[in-house]
Length: 159
Image (cartoon, rainbow, N blue to C red; front, side, top):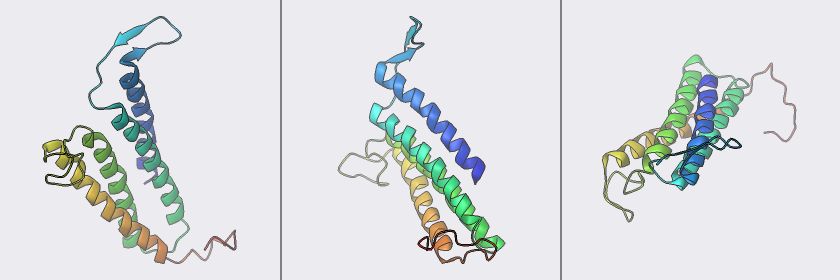
């Protein structure tokens, strides 16, 4: 889970460069007087969502990995939590990426107020739904899992 979180953060940082290229219409080597015009497909707001979303997904994975290490869970529950978070990280990433190319914004698998379904819409929607369900399951399992007895509660109000 930790490696997936770190990789998501790295991809989010790369997405920040794509966002800048989208905003300025190319690649700049500022302060050097070098500019290469480049059309970036998608929208600047879509790349902003991708950039910030992947950064937040990475941080989420790291925080939940740390939380998992403080809980007494079986091997099966631990694996379920890990896979739920991993599916959420990459399902959300797929949503951020593909929704900016989908007429219906990947919000449903069929026609909605934004437009008709498409391949990009399906590539955005179905991984996002899988991720949402996986993350809800992982969160519930973490919520009901008791803390490790070896892990003292550092803050009385943390429960």
